[in-house]
Length: 117
Length: 112
Image 1 (cartoon, chains in turn orange, yellow):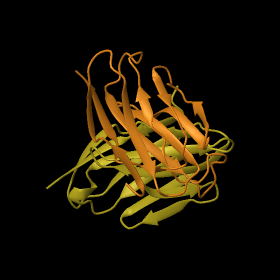
Image 2 (image 1 turned 90 degrees about the vertical axis):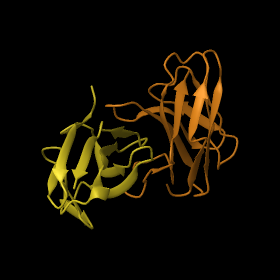
Image 3 (image 1 turned 120 degrees about the vertical axis):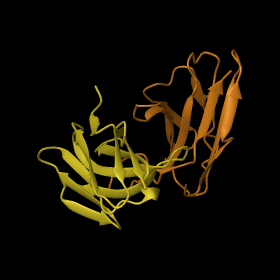
Image 4 (image 1 turned 180 degrees about the vertical axis):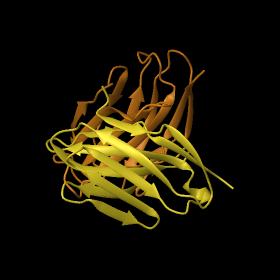
């Protein structure tokens, strides 16, 4: 899991609630990412941030929001607008997000499993 | 359409046996290909990375191959152990912004 932590490990949400997933890294990486993982599918990109105070929508951003006020932190909020939020959420970071070079490995956190009650 | 296809979806092997996982991709322009191992309920961990000019790379009992002409990669597990039970994910990167394309993974179960 490297130097990335995610909390909580398990999260339960009631219908209509917003919940926030935490992601912190101490690797001094510029880029951070949020992915959603569903059974039988590859990881899908929700949001990414290449640098502090900047972030971009990924492939499935609807119903999610993020902030990047600090280099170390990239919290993800799952809003009530996300109709099917039950999934495993993975946060990752890489040295830089500008180029997919040889050394630009993504390091993943341990994940948060979100379940809607 | 997914730009990274993995096969098989799942396989069961006996402890001590070998197995090979496949990854076909259409990502272009190709930068590099990584194989990750993901234990159940955990985040993926990188096993190998291969660039355009590399054909083979090994990491302990894991050997990855890459044919950039046919856009195919394989991951060979030698003398499997119970701890090899996991999902193995192929990730391909394109030059440019650095977006990573993920395969759906192959679920490997090693039985005693």
